[in-house]
Image (cartoon, rainbow, N blue to C red; front, side, top):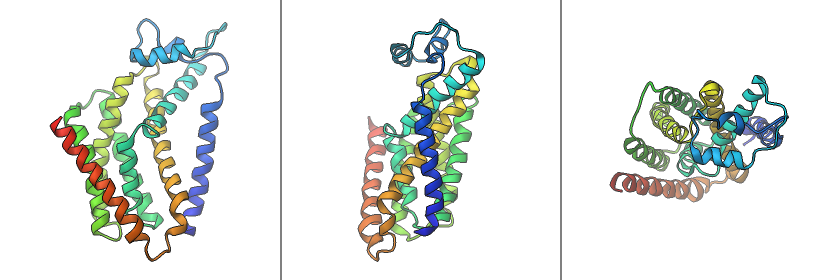
Length: 251
């Protein structure tokens, strides 16, 4: 639909800039030497991967360079957590995408989801809240199924959908925090790393939406779009979500 084009073009530009951000090598050194020192808070596996690719440096990085190196690293980690690794989060975002072919409902859902998961990610990362993964992971899977089932039952976004998405976003934020806890956060660059990881997550979600739009936008006006695209895909997403929920509860 034409109403999507300005948003999609802006998103594509943002993704190109992001790819360039990842591609440009740091001016002096990789962040590994600063992040993986004696008192490092990073996971050993992450440090090993960083050190394996570290460039030889002669001049130690300045505080400003350390800031940007940390930001670059954690934006990339956040992005990779969604694409390609975050299958459950990808399916949830796709379920939101298929709730409506109109721009306003999609923006509303993505906005409340972003606010919610940013809130709990920050609270969990700073130790303000702590919810076991044994609770978080099944609920994340159930959220995927719930949203997809709503797509099957209703032709457009329901009035209560934003509230539901906000609640599920709180849980997804706890999931992001669990992943970030496994990676570790450098205490000297804690806030930049946390914010950068969240930015990477957002860029990953935007990528999912942009890719879905590129593949499907020409089909929106087709009379069979709901019966042949939205309903079968939502049914598949719901089945996967239910399977994961049971799997995470029982095993």
